[in-house]
Length: 416
Ligand code: SF4
Ligand code: SF4
Image 1 (spheres, rainbow, N blue to C red):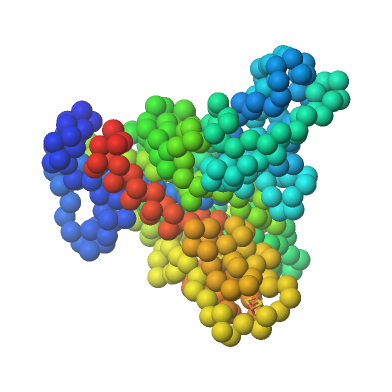
Image 2: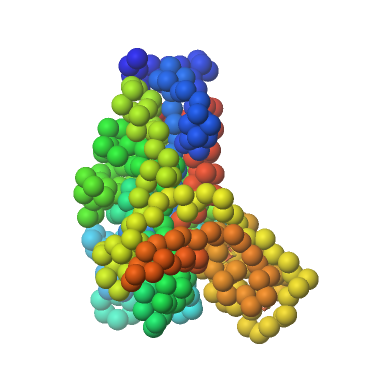
């Protein structure tokens, strides 16, 4: 059977279409259920993870028109942003590009990802402008004050990721872990949401292509094109959406061994038009390989595991505050990449938690605890069982955003 997008949309409009999340569809396959093109019309896939290739474009009112000729330097909560390309000469406003990975010069462990979350939450941010004549202008703004606030993901929602371990005795600082990666073979960090990841379910990009509508951090957005360094074997996407429509839960900063990074969440609908598209949707975690690389070489796999790393594990930690030592400092609170761990109550803020698992690694009493699973690889002539020590993708948010997209498609607020 062959269907068209228009036919599926009209079934949706009349309330007759079947929409499943990728997770619901995979559960059917895992249970051995037969699913045909007749049985499902749309599948919503999702991913959430650290996505360094993320930038924001802002237009910011700063001072009265004529008060300065042109901005030379701009800082948002101390984070350097790049003025231009439009000079906005004598208008008292600036266009800036802010990288999600830029770090604040005034606030410790704060960067572009945290700033974008703060803006979406409606918080006030400080703006400092130095003009071409070295005069300084300061103001504060909220998202409402910005005529343009648009997120542009230059490399988002990868299909294939590499995971990392450290074979060496000396720990290594990297953007792939919340703190230095301990060795030898003592830590393992990975990204990607496996079988529910959008591109993993459409590897030939028959559906996900230039112009495809997406949910980016909860806002309706679009695929501009494939992202930078995208290849047919390792595709990723360039996406954009208006920050005014985003939900702060789906994005934010993430502290790593090399300073704060940024995470986003993306959901993409796959209309089930024919057998070939359904066949691609049958991919399961066990079918998706995850190369394990030496953090030193980065692109040289030393072994391969698969995305069953997401099976039989917890997505969030639990805590037992009564057993706490009250040590100073409280390491989970110090190292939590998203500032979700409360050092006073020893509890986890569920709106902020990313499920990375790092808190359970660093607490000497195991007050926060989470089952993150482990991998087993052959390396240097030995079988090595390595505990998963950090996850840089969040399966829970990926499930949440794919569920949200399903709801929007069914209630008609997101048209295919
Ligand atoms: S590190 Fe662990 S035991 Fe120490 S204060 Fe924090 S939660 Fe309590
Ligand atoms: S799992 Fe722990 S360290 Fe990671 S975000 Fe949640 S509270 Fe923070």
